[in-house]
Image (spheres, rainbow, N blue to C red):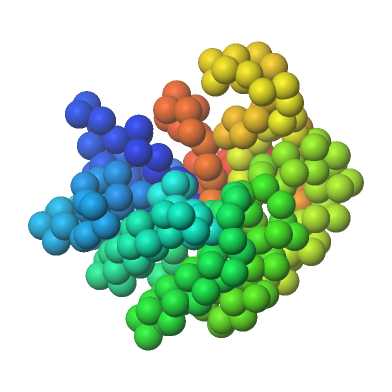
Length: 268
C-alpha cells in the first residue's frame, strides 16, 4: 500500500527548509508527498517562474522522494465572474506538473457557481496533461455525489476521484452509516484516498480558534482524534494510495512511520 503525506505551506519556514521537511517524511518510509508549488514561488500572476521551478525540481530530486501536485484551494472553475483568472492559475499548475514529471494533480471541486464551466475546464486541463501521462484527481469539497457527477461528466481516462474521507464525513453530518454509503458511491472511481479526522459537525459556525473546542469543521486531525471509522472505510477499498492530510505543525512532526499509520488506521 502506497501512503503519502501532504506538505502544507506553513510546514516550510526559515528554520525548516523544504528539503529538511521532505527528508523527515522519507525517513519515516512514506512513499510520496503532496506539494503546493504555487506557495513555493513557482507561480506568479498566473505564470510559471522557471528559475523557481528549477530550484524546486533540484530539491525534490535531491531528496529522492516521489511527489504529486496540489492546485491552490482557491481555484474555483465554477466561478463565472473570475473564471479566466482561476483557469489561468490552474493551467499554470498543470504546466508545473508536466515540467516536474509529477503524475498526479489533485484539485478540489468548486463550491459554488456554474457546473458546466468546471466540467469544460477540467476537460481542457485533462487534454493538456494527458500526452505527458499526468492524471487529474478531483477532490470532493464536501459532497461525494456532486464531485462524482463532475468526474463522470468529464469522462476522461486521466480524470479520477480523490476521495477525502473527512470531507465526506462532514457532508454526512457525522453519520457513520451515511458516510459508508457515500464512500461506496465512489469506490470504483477513487484513485487516491485522503485521510484526516474530524467530528462530523459543521455547525455552529465559530471563530477558527474556537473550532477545536466545539469540535466543528474541517479540523484536519490525526486519525483517531476524531470520530471517523477509518477501519470500516478501508475495508471498502483494494490497494488504493492513501494521502495523510494533517495541518497542524506539531501533529505533523509527530506522525508515526508508515507501518505505524497503517496499524492505527486499521484499528479504528
